[in-house]
Image: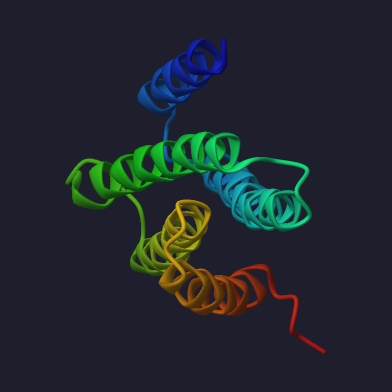
Length: 150
């Protein structure tokens, strides 16, 4: 069932992005949506890690959930790459900078999820990977969302 939902979500994203024009409102919506996605992905991975450590989730379920997260993160990175390399995108240099920063954060979130998968698979080095990537992702999220602005 989750794979069906995942496939539907990706299909909708692809359809919407194909029809979108690069207007200010589209860019603002993209920024707001991407901010929410980064924050929620960070929270989701952390919550699942807490569930695993607290023995609410077993290793197999944790690995499955993180596999879904890494697949979705990879898909979003691919869409960003397509947008960044499309000569017809019409996006500004500032918007490209934002998307590259977002992509860097997504890579950290991917590594965080991968670290949790490794840890759940009895690879103790996964904890260091998880913690390092988690700290790096949070720093980027704070910056992108302006959470550390006074």
